[in-house]
Length: 451
Image (cartoon, rainbow, N blue to C red; front, side):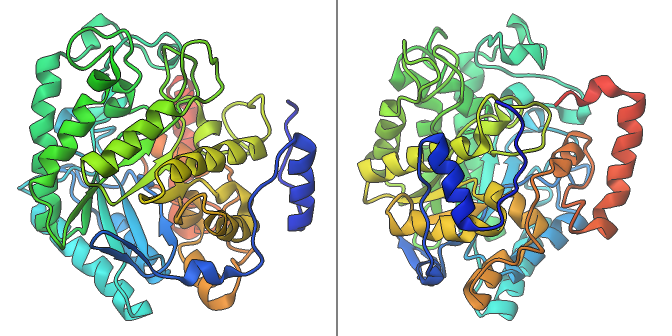
């Protein structure tokens, strides 16, 4: 498909283009549904708007939050979102995505306690409520890069992904290693609770280790092959974390329901379905998470930001031109999430990826909630560009078009360069110097920045 820039001046123009492409998008003119509080088990959310996990690549060497980390989350808390789903925090050193990825340990626990206190106090002072804070516990798997040197730990060989990042049979993790991670997720939950987070997320999305296991159809042993085996580590990690659950601390998951690869290299498809989603297994998994494991809420997403970027976060500027219109990606995301919500109606579902719609993302989000496709929405790139988007919607009636994310991808460039990450366009005083450093590195080492 020819590259098409975002050019819509009105929501009607955007809807007309979607109709030309063969589908409709949810929309509402009244934003009041987004002001409504939401309950999920013992969790309480002040409204239906939240912050999606966006790595800042700004930790200290030992994985503790830096001044940039604190600044980012304090600004987001002040911005009025009811839920802040923290970025990926590694559960083991070898599973870090970079030397600047957050890592929570007993040694730096006090730093996280201080961070959580500051974030909650900022929300209370600015809005009268503290945001609900979820700590995302992760193992980067194929994208492990401790010390900024690739050291992939993979579930199985994936020829398409290995075009971008080399791996061989020696990188395949053993069943014994995976078994040991179950306890590590429990330890991560304990530390998250001690730090003051309201919940821990056992992360299984975006091509990281637990997500890769869900498509390990041909892996031998107890973590591959059958559905039960492919979901074993995720479920056992959740069970280990639930040992620390109580009325003030919950366990949840951010789950990828479609990877964007045909069987046998992607979850959310079936043999013979090609790239067309088959959500039978994702629906089964979410139902089991709710009815069997007792999770009250989840966040659903799709794709792999390293490879099928357009599936994860539809864009009009990036490393490649997808063979689909970004609005098709928006439609696939919300309809897929909506299919899960309708199949498991008692589970509270947070949806993802509205940012491409810019100043119309609020209309879309309110429509998705009204239509029962989700219970609330997490904003990722938008939060980098405009951390006050929630207050703009709730207090002012609409998101400010002068503040929105332009999906330019510069924040992605920063994180790949291991530079403190934020919006180069909307916050140039802070992040433009880092972007200039990235450009100089790219000029001298172009092979390191293939995406």
